[in-house]
Picture 1 (cartoon, rainbow, N blue to C red):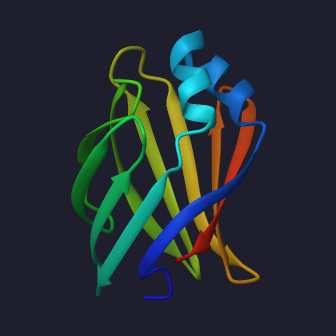
Picture 2 (cartoon, rainbow, N blue to C red):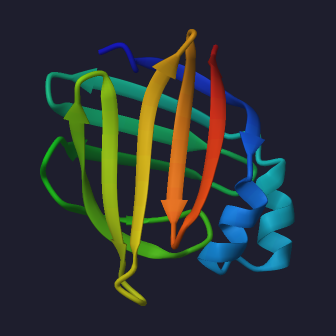
Length: 132
């Protein structure tokens, strides 16, 4: 339950290149660079409630570890997959519905910060969040 709380994006690494690889158009990339994303995570056992708030949208999702679910990314890309817990790391594997390519995401705590890492088609990126 270490992930519980509200986290605000502080900085990103290689995020623009990642969005390019995902096929996000230029306008959405520019907005997403400065989206002021806040993630609120509530964990109860293996069940999660996550609220994402940004300049692009506000979205809430409920999921259970290991149980596949459908999700729409901020740019409109639809994916299906599941989160797993491996030690202190959340690992998500999601398949895009438009091309069946794999998007992987991890969430881990490093030095009191939430580090969310992404990989798509060989391009890695990170977004680092500070607890509010």
